[in-house]
Image: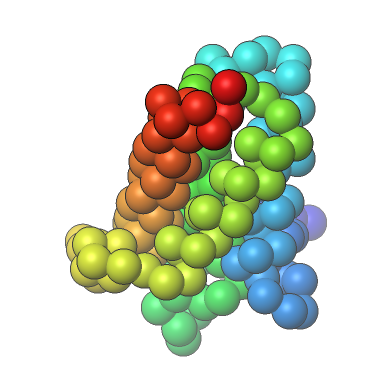
Length: 164
């Protein structure tokens, strides 16, 4: 029988993607692209926005329930935060760049860059508030950084004629 702690861990692990033995954060971000692609294909940008908004409380609940039973504050296998950050990146760039495999690949690469590098405020918000929230805060801000970088780069490329 599945208990509530096991369910919370499964959700926190990005539905199992965080249990990948090598680079679980990257595996989680990559796994998040599949439901994002499906939502955008089936329901458009508003579908992705809807699932993103539904997953914020789900992610917070899963870490709130799973963390008290852990010895680490931010175990590597918790990757539901990567799902949120990856989706936020896509939500910021898809209106400008359109839905294509290239947009998803660039969104993935930019999000992973900022999630691993953690420049400026991204590192600082990692310790903002209770642990069940701060685990998500840095990934959400990394998603904003990645989305703004790609969006700005795309607009500059359009204005300069690089992408005509």
